[in-house]
Image 1: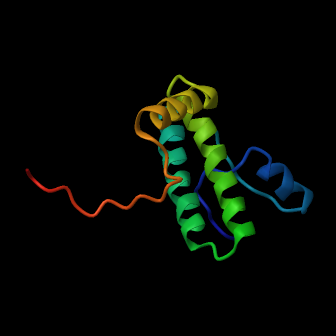
Image 2: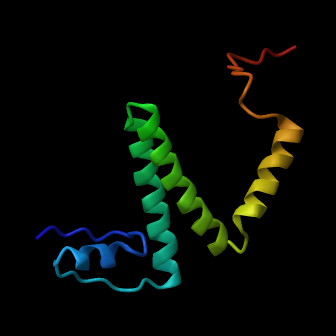
Length: 108
């Protein structure tokens, strides 16, 4: 039987049980939860980087976004707060839509 030792989505144990399989889980404390969310973010970003088509890329980005929702809450905010910060930064510094690639900044 595989050993995972990782944070999973809330309904995964239910899905496993419906398959007639046994499993072990535990509830993480707040410090463990934050650490495991960060680990999961790294995992999902790597999966996005390795995706080879648009559908897979969007699936992985959805997973990243789900983790960002949870991370924003443990940092005392919300996804709406993150979005407000993102919008403000876009107003002040722009986004990435223009595809600007900075090569160097020369001293005067």
